[in-house]
Length: 288
Image (tube, rainbow, N blue to C red):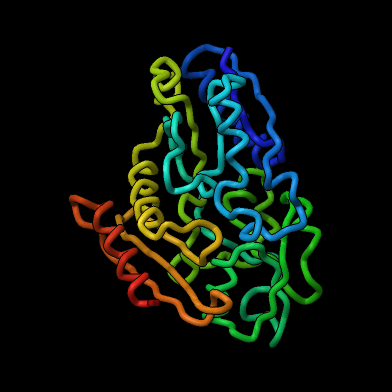
């Protein structure tokens, strides 16, 4: 029996069940889900960037593995801090779903002047302000069904397409936002599976569900983020597409929306992570 730690939301549970089935198919072992409540789950009212940003949905799940209450942990990769957690290793980056964002409600062109958009992401706000500075924003927290019930009158909410794919809710999408202008969060659309560092048997059991092209992309995106030392508290995005093009976004200022810089670069054949770190330094310098 393999014990899998995960959050209990519908999206997290569904992601975990997909991983569990894949692990069972690969190993012949049954997988038991161990549900864990995280700080982000318990504090539903405060904006994410105020309660800790990146990591608020993973720390308690990781602790369950470190304590021995579970053997592996499953997370949305975008929630993982850019620095590895002591004692744990990402044994698998599962094949990525659609990494982009989408509007639900009104399309960008149909939003009236001063319309309201709900999102808890400072990155999404900064990117929308860059093309529609007239928009007003309100916070958006809660699980997927809760958020879908909070579409402002004559406005929109912003959601990750992958989250809607997991729950079979892509029919709710009004407009898919291009990754060229709305660079996704690092790791968006991917599920990460961690195990204890040194647990070779468990690492081997998970290795079969690791997707090499996704691993390549995420290691580069995470190198960019790690160089900045930033998480959800900053308006930052990075995305490596199937053609090996790195797109990055960074904004700064009193409201994190008044200035921004983007890069679109073909990755070199070698030292791609070093290249991504250099792009991060250029972004930081441009906004200094």
